[in-house]
Picture 1 (cartoon, one colour):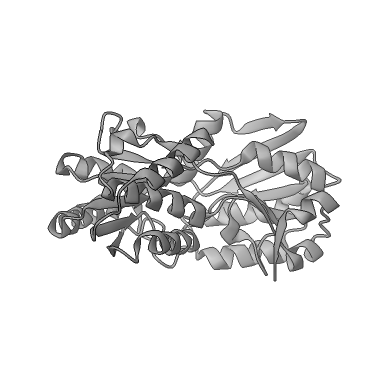
Picture 2 (tube, rainbow, N blue to C red; picture 1 turned 135 degrees about the vertical axis):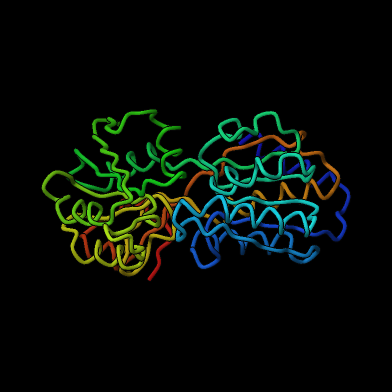
Length: 323
């Protein structure tokens, strides 16, 4: 919180920025809801004064064997564009593009990153700053313990992506079974679509609720890509226990009931303000790396009705309801 206030005061004290070339490098693809939300925020902060370009690694849909060649292609395009500042969204962008651009002397602002710069060989990079993202494990469990009558065991279901591995390892190390305030969290990370689907179908035998991480890198045994919307539809249709989420784009009709969630918009807005500081001649090394803002209560009325979820009067007054 203190660092966030510091950034706001620094921004107010700076001279106006000049028209610049801004590059956003996405780990995923523009249609991915998280990306769409942060792109909207970046455009709101920077679009009026600067030219914004986007490149995407597409690592939710491309197989891992193609990540390096995709990163090489984007590196060539980045150097040809010669942007004044680069915003990198999520872990894969920082992991694959950060080292390739380390010597380019271009300021980089990362966001949505669950790992650390040092983990990606960028711990000594003075032209780097950004926003760390941390799924709200403890806050979510504390919230659900107030919402649910049955609250002994929760399944956290995630894909086995770089982002989700970093999120879990940063919070819990190698542990995949966690106790939080008397509730047990079992963490399942998998890229096997069949295993993910079976976990949904049988969750009621062991658990009181399922909490979703991302599920965008799953493939079937024949290597077909598992469409995330199809997986979510299956979960909504077949789960016998309530579904909750860590991120806002999983809340809505035909998805989860809701939860205490993070927003891509908030991450993008904070990162864009950092980029604006750099364009106002503040050196990246003077801008501290911060952790993103706290979450918000977001609930789907249809999802609440589907699983008979009730909020306290106090929580309801702090909640945004959709559909």
